Length: 492
Picture 1 (tube, rainbow, N blue to C red):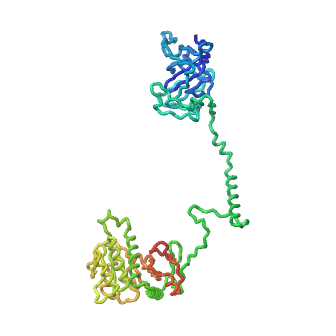
Picture 2 (spheres, one colour):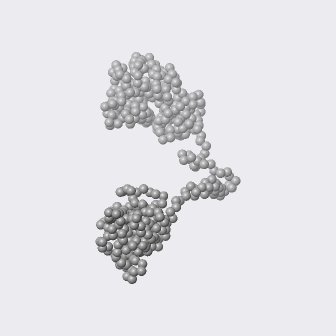
């Protein structure tokens, strides 16, 4: 009886997992309960294998579409593999349930499946393997499920089927029969990469760039342009001149900036002459005091910790600065610095003795300082006993050496040396004998003086002297500050 169905065109529904297959019956084996189809179609797409074998346990529904030699072309019937019922001897019991078979003109390609599945190739006696996992699958080398999808067939959604109703794809319905079998071969990446001659391609690119560059410059004999790193300037520039400041008389000591620019020191006489000419052109003492105070306070704020120390979340640890000033211009610069520090929420303690007569600049600076929250004391006893965060020394001046013999001066020097806080000196004198307080940092104005080793590390601040003023005193000047107003100097 099994041979009666050979050559029949049937449709086998294997459920949502495997999908629907159509093809001609090539063999039916009752012993192994298998049926084989030749020239099969899977969900309307021609399979790349010539034959597929099914097990009876995988078949949910079998429809006979066409029987060879039938006068009507399509008949409704069933074969023993339609169901899994067996008798006691193990033979298959044919199903008596009617099977609905559509007419030939109503037969349409059925398609739509939940997830890509596999079936193994069946050549001759190779049988179809049932799936061993309820969900998912194990990829095999001869799997054709993924490659069998046509270019217009999209992967359906998980809920693409409801109650056995398959979704229809118009592209597959119209063009499914004409889709050619896709090759089941892997692309040889290594072989194709071996065909690419990297050295030859880059050599050709370099030759082309060199020719284009020579044509643009008009110098055919010019050598190949040099290559640049990502952080180098590709524009051709003039050689860097590191000695951009030339003074008429060398004082014997030179400094250099972080960028390598040479900054020579000048004598106090030339420095005094420079400030006098600047004041003649409108850079008054008040302007210089303001610039010196701003630069010194900016440097002091950095030394105190900058934003890590001065922020709204750290108001309970305000830094304390002790400011030691004398009755001279250097003292007025210190008072200006203290005013700016107090405006930046720094606890400032200003030491300035009581004098019968003081400079007008000091009086003006004291008036402004009195408008802040800073504290002014006239006795060393009123200075804190515990170490402060920073000591700013403005006790020394360039000319009045007799101040070192005053009792208040010696008392202030002793307090500063005994306090373990670091010291910043503003515009210190040249001679080491005139520097009674050992400083860790020193701030010079405009151009540095040849300071001694006791001055510590030297910094330079810009007080706004124009370039033409430097030229009037015989100094060839180019600003070494760049984008800053305070820069560190290193001994050359």
